[in-house]
Image (cartoon, rainbow, N blue to C red; front, side):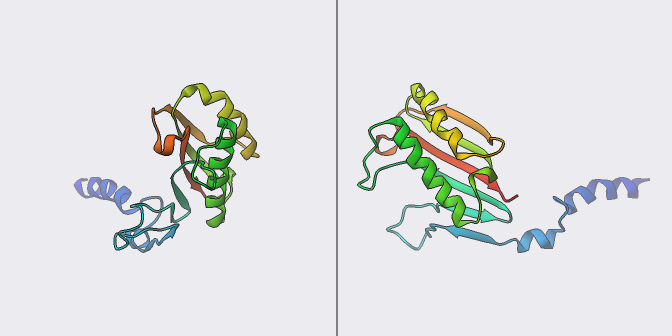
Length: 152
């Protein structure tokens, strides 16, 4: 009886997501817009990391080519979402592969305007999402958006 109890408790640990531990250890990562600790000039993060079929997108902001904030919230939302879409495409994914999005916003009064633009980037179900009032963002941006996508 004790032996069966031990096996029942250990088996879930061995089979994580149906994979044996060796398969998990061999899972490769692919970095997009990568930075390394050896590059002291680069910002200390990568733009996206693909682990298996899951893509983790770093927070991004929607600035003009000259690093200025667009005049309207709608223009800024479009730029930040275009950037997110481009990052997904580098990994062979689309906006519809997103499963979670987190939006940091300097003023939640921009919520409705962001949503008007956001909804145009999807063809199916929307991903789970959090929209957070965050106060001042880098470069005085209105939005910073990050996400997680899983290849369909």
